[in-house]
Every structure is written in structure tokens, then in C-alpha cells.
Image (tube, rainbow, N blue to C red; front, side, top):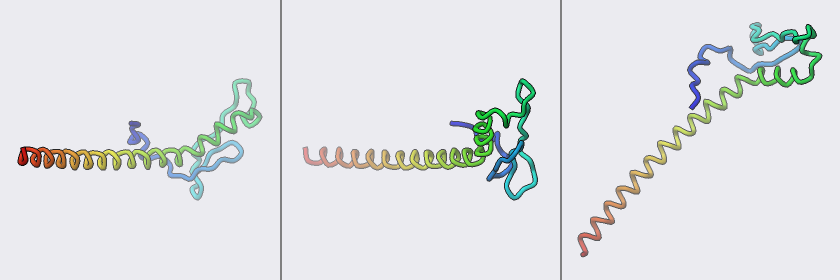
Amino acid sequence: MIDTDKYEGHTEGPWAYREDEVYAEGNPRIVALRAHGTDGELTSKLPHRWADFALIAAAPDLLQALIDEQAEVKRLQKESHQRWLQIRELNELLNDFREAYE
């Protein structure tokens, strides 16, 4: 499992992007600034960088989805364990029944 504790204290989403910055909506705090490319051009002139920027802006949503899925996995593990205990108990009852009628 991914350790999501290291993200505690991150800027809450949703995030958005415009021009050369990623920012938290409703919060004046800028989360990230776009850097210049290796040739000195702004990355806005490099189309593949827009996808990177959009992915950075989606980070809070992706993290929340991960946290939600981890909670669901834990719930399913607990449910699976409870079912296993029920099956074990039924198996013991079946064995007792068989022994009683042998």
C-alpha cells in the first residue's frame, strides 16, 4: 500500500491551472509555478507540458481517490475475514453433526 501520511498538510484541492501557475481554488496560495524549458522557452510553448500541468492540478483528486480506495480495500478485507469465520463456524457445526450421527 502507498503511505499517504507523507502528504499530510498538503494544500487542499481542488486545484486549477492558468498561465504559469497551479493554484488552489478559493485560496490565493500558489501550489506550483511552471519552469522554463531547458532551452529557455516557457513550457507553455511545449504542448506536452500542459498535460503535465493538468496532472499536477489533479493531484488532490488523485490522492483522495487513492485514500477512498484504500478504505474500501480495508472494508472488504474485514468483510472477507468475517465471512471466513462464519464458514469455519459452519464447518465445525457440520463436523459435530456428522460425529453425532455416526
